[in-house]
Image 1 (tube, chains in turn orange, purple):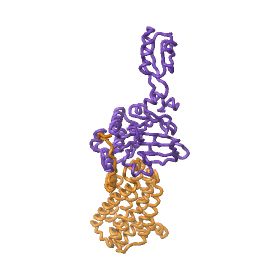
Image 2 (tube, helix red, strand yellow):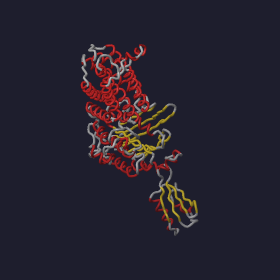
Image 3 (cartoon, one colour):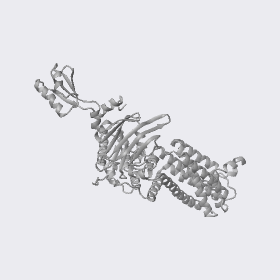
Image 4 (cartoon, chains in turn red, green):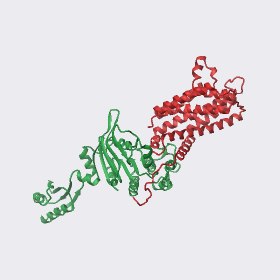
Length: 256
Length: 307
């Protein structure tokens, strides 16, 4: 064919960075547009911080409530986005053939996963900024090494992403929706977010302490509230969850 | 233009659990429009999805634009456009947003605004995908398949559930694609769609191709066509038969109703009318009944296409 019409073939993939940037931007827009997702990622953490930070419901010892709460709410924010939000969104993308359709596009699978990770990180940055501003308004005085905090947040994101994607890629979308919300609620209560772990019986504490949410919230608390150095034990727990979760997700994820 | 195959499927077998969906299927699609025609459950979607790289054959080979759709997927994907039977769009995305996104994944996409205009998607406005009508969702999926300016487009039941007007619009687009040198492989269970659009039709049933050729070839190659007319009862059919070519038949199945079967061409028609003139018969209601793909399908498979 020598003539050039409107549809004359001129195939080609866009450059990879452009594809990934476009995908990440779209994923982030979808997330920020979704009311249920905003409830999980913005409203609930904010409410918990403001409510328990101003009203003395949880006995947090002699320290001010906000110094105890802010690290827990940061951990909750990470969990809400990387685990709950990502699991539900990805579960429905799988159900509605979005993952399938994208698989036939020039964007490679790892490019899609990279874009999802960027979208999660962008959302988390917005959450961290929001939580930090509110916490400062409530008189928060954080301590510690920012590098250790960053490391905890990144490993926590990896651990929760692996678990969220494992759920989204193996269960039905409705089951993922229900399970992700239930897990969110259970971990919110039992993971040291607003209820200190030492309120639980010793036997329970030992188990609860191994959960990724406990490692993240206790690790952040050690650094930000008590000015501890690098919390290696908590980082180690998160690293194990990350390896197990991402490994299982890579192994068992079904695209359609 | 009819040289290199764009799709070549040889002895494809695909099973799901104990069920064999595709059972030794051979298919060659060349440039132009190829329709894969068959009833629900014949293996159309499985065949197309194997070509798109979604499924790996249990045995047999599949080549699309000369490439292995699974092993050479990176190379193949930018060159093909895919329209799934349903879905494929974020439920919260707007039509133009999703189409623009697909365009961004390609190096030289079509003008998105022009495509939106062309397919009448402008009226979708800010409505999210889950609230679009079925027809709008179909047209968006079609637009997504062509926006990257592919060489070959796979359309899986592109007009299923469309109203007649939207169906025509889709047909027009397929014709424009063809005219501009884009090859199209589409599945359908509508005979008229295959007859209207396809250069080549592959009829599949129970996971195998039972016939392939142009719509004309298939209609000619199937049963013979017939010519019918009415006249006064009791005419001498044997004298008509003598005037006709050797492979024809002539009969009076009901009083005054005459039927001639065979290869109906202008010459045969002239022979029949000449014979009528010689016998002083006015052949009322003379009509040539061409076999449609529907008849061909029925003869080949013993099944109604739409069950």
